[in-house]
Image (cartoon, rainbow, N blue to C red):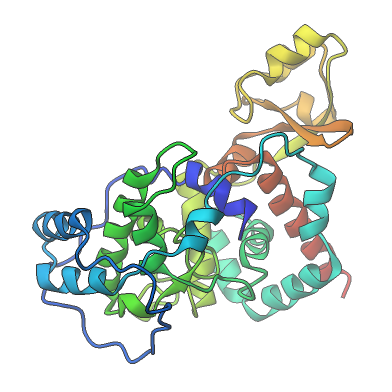
Length: 357
């Protein structure tokens, strides 16, 4: 998860309140063996910011201070995390066609069909409960982790501590965001009885099949299989339910299309006006028509707001769609129109391949 997580850092704003959980003693023992980083990597046992963080989180969340300090003392600064979180070089051209090709391809479609077949009952129950179609959930998990094949190999405690206390210079400082996520990570581990040193994920701290950040797990992940634990690493049922719940919480409307075909205005000023709000639905179909944008028949009948979404294609002409509230809801998972359309098209391709069997 490279480009996706660079976008996600801006999108997981983690609105709403944190789920309450009973304050208790230190977490129960977890038998999974933790992968340890190189012993030469700088640790956070004597880092003043980390020590202060442990004291504050202990007081704020009721976690044992000694346990927090011990966990942070085992966390290490990872240079690769600092490098990977940096934005792409200035002038890097966006290319929807190339981006699409990475995800809508035979192996991922085949894996999606297999995932859908194996977990059909959970997908159906999630759609019934939260109104999000199975193909959208399948699209998200397929784009995020290739249906669990690529979930990240960094220890989450190392990645989040690095970005919380040693965020690299050269881009907007997001250390406060990652301190919040590190706090949420410890809350999650305490609640679920997980050894913080054992959990792996992306370089930015996202975890499991759907690549949720810790705060998103605490707010929106669900125990869809009813076993008493939220497990996004090994429970596809929980992953499916959590994705559907997350999208519904961010405004998904059952039965609403994600987007419509559109021909953009010829006049540059009209086009610029419609593109101004970017992915935020802001204009009626009538307003599109007034400004010279030609929607397809379904789009012309759309009753809500639309966004004119531009996807660049390198040196070639851009692609455009008219995004609805549901397109926008997918971008709350990852603030990128490229990501949203890849999710939609992968889900559609998997559904078509499944129907053809």
